[in-house]
Image (cartoon, rainbow, N blue to C red; front, top):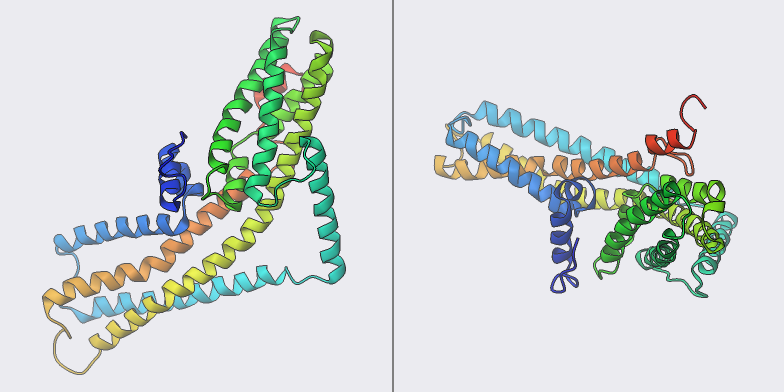
Length: 346
């Protein structure tokens, strides 16, 4: 993703840059969930408009429309109740004793001090995105140092392994620093950028080069390799920490938006249902009005489901990509594992 100076300071411009970089990833993970849900509703509106044009919606018949309205009202009431109850359960876990709070604060302070010592800064940023950016900039400096050591490798295999490590990480670091330096980035983007990297393989390569090929490089390569592995571990810890904060904030945000969207939708559906069941013969409104009002209420009725789906997809992607427990990884490159004698038979 290349920088766009005109878009750096705007939320919408930042979202457009993320969409251009990887449209599928934007839909599944990085995109704003409200925008993704709005896109889903737009597609649903297009499908419903096509059905209406083909004459597939019986506006003049009350029974099919009433059945659909009843189903939407009942489903939305159930959906809102379940999600809000779930959010209360998750947020209830934040109720801790003073001793537990103090212990977590002390552990977090100790971790920040370790990171400060690793990156050579007495004070590290407190914002999650700036904190992770400081770690990635340290990784970038270490990679520059290792690139100068690459030509000094005594064997072709050692030079190729070091080149593979530095090239892959350098590309990822460039993308991460470009994302995290944007004013519109936040804790969720600090988490997302760390999900795309295979740090387990990178740390494994660094350890392998440090211990198995130590005699094939100059003495100056050992220290940056060790520091690189340490900094990548700090990034992994930060990602796990941000994941916990992200999931809790995501569920709370989902519950809030469901109430904002669900209550007006329920009122509209109930109002249309009462209009259809009012005394009198025939449809309650003129056919031209029904062709507008009924599709709008139906599309709005699906809004809570589309919104929930956009959040659930992102949460499942985050959970799936953080399923492994560092330093173990089910995604370790097969070529790396077999080359180093750590395949299934070893």
